[in-house]
Image (cartoon, rainbow, N blue to C red; front, top):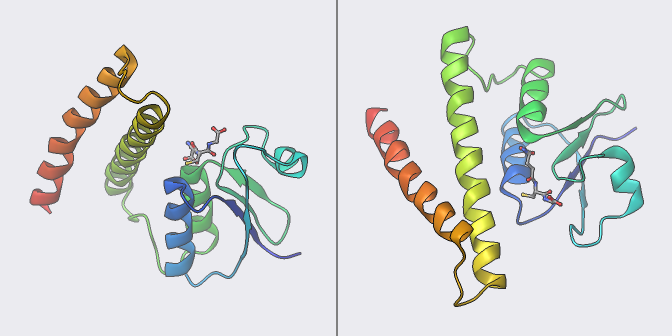
Length: 145
Ligand SMILES: N[C@@H](CCC(=O)N[C@@H](CS)C(=O)NCC(=O)O)C(=O)O
């Protein structure tokens, strides 16, 4: 059985896993999913209906990019992605979650701006505020490294 990554080319979460697999030189087959019209075969492997989903060679099926990253790093530890020390690993996961949250909000805002042109909603303003609040947090972290 070949290893399969269900993905979408514009998905930041899929990109995260593609970078990880490339860094670890793990071979896989890509299956692009039309997120506007998800095929039943995809919904069978992913009940949450989101990409990325990794199906490993032995049939192990994982959805959610953070769970996939953790699984891949534990099963294929060279080169190591997450720090070995548990406190450093916790920090790394916190930043991963922050980056995922920021990415999620930016994409939601982008979609809302596309579909709701010139008529911003309360939710759009909330997303904008939240995104603008997260950028300085990242900038501070970037400068401290
Ligand atoms: N927490 C999930 C989020 C995945 C996610 O939101 N994927 C989006 C594409 S970037 C998706 O598949 N959306 C389709 C949908 O929600 O129907 C992860 O980290 O994998």
